[in-house]
Amino acid sequence: MGFPKDFLWGAATASFQIEGAWDEDGKSPNIWDEFCEQPEKILDRSDGRVACDHYHRYEEDVALMAEHGIRNYRFSVSWPRILPEGTGKVNEAGVAFYNRLIDCLLAHGIRPWMTVYHWDLPACLQRRGGWLNEQMPEWFAEYTGVLAERFGDRVKDIITINEPQCIIGMGYMAGLHAPGLKLGVKDQVIACHNLLKSHGRACRVLREKVKDVRIGYAPCGGVKIPEDEHDPADVEAARKAYFATTALSPAFSVAWLSDPAILGRYPEDGLKHFEKYLPEGWQEDLKLICQKLDFYTQNIYEGDEIRAADNAEGYEKVRYPAGHPRTAFGWPVTPRALYWGPRFLWERYRLPFMISENGISCHDWVMLDGKVHDPNRIDYLHRYLRELRRASEDGADVRGYFCWSLLDNFEWAKGYTERFGLVYVDFATGERIPKDSLAWYAETIRANGENL
Image 1: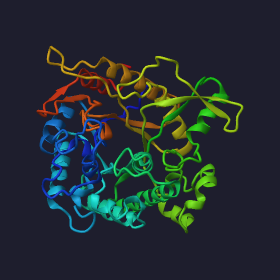
Image 2 (image 1 turned 45 degrees about the vertical axis):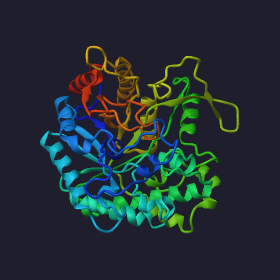
Image 3 (image 1 turned 120 degrees about the horizontal axis):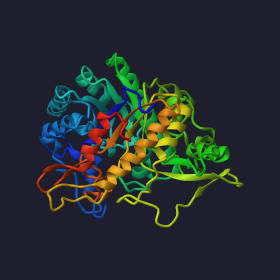
Image 4 (image 1 turned 180 degrees about the vertical axis):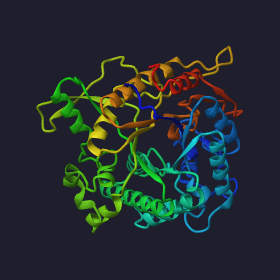
């Protein structure tokens, strides 16, 4: 069977990770600009001030995609480039940049997929409380409205928020990402709720202003994979574990941050732990949070094997054996995550599904022949895509796949120490060198996965 004939093959990036031009043309600082200034927060003490300089080199990057048959490009918009004060006056120079990018994409036959928010909150709004401020849904709606009005004539595929789990879990709980907070459970619950309301407000604004819009949402979460997929008990244990909400925090839960948006309710196990922290009137808020979505995506990189167990949870995690393969980042290589993740998510949410991010950090460098050979990445993508194809063949409504990432880039708290790109970037000169994996991906696109 293979992938559907109209399967969407793409690549993804995020504004702060590639754009640079951190203070050009009226852009104000975002929370990551300020986080990078704090000592010891970024592994290599770097920042995103130049990054890949995509702001000035976007035409080169778009041409690389077009040359290699990538016809779908997921990118995000920098909120402080559009609204330097977070709300209020629109920065026309920022709008002009994204107009140039979108027009360039369309001229090359590439469909733009816009992410409204990929972590670069205006620093001025963080000083007003960020996701803890109950006004956040209105700020987010105003910002989304500007994008709808300025770009909605050409951009029809829009994802509201990228990885809410990391926004709250890494930024408000663990303190490892901007804004670097370590808050208690009550504040985490409030922040999650405000984020979900912001998603709902954005959906309403997009429906109002872009009549033919297609709206998606891009959470994340490590997949739970049955140890023995032919054992119904292990399959059920993995399903239960995947959607469980633990008492420790709601921040990394798949269900806590997707059930309200799609099913219109918080998961029962989560409410047992966290209902006492939800704001007054939260039940009424669910009407706002739950909006019609045209597709659902997840960023999936890895997972844990789970087996049924005779304990309170009914499942237990299986330890990977010594020497289990890992990426340069240290993440386990678990191709079946791209089978069981899409399958479980399709079963639960019944929305057309896409992988909005998947990829691998490798120890890439320019070799003596002047090229970048990355057989590990090719093997990784081959294995994962084969499992995604299997999920499609077994009935999950899988519509597309966006490889992370088009370019090597600023990898958040890891700085420039991790390379996820299909294209190598020399950060000293800005030079782009297509890796072997880009040619392999181009062939996979051409064959629609039949080469797998």
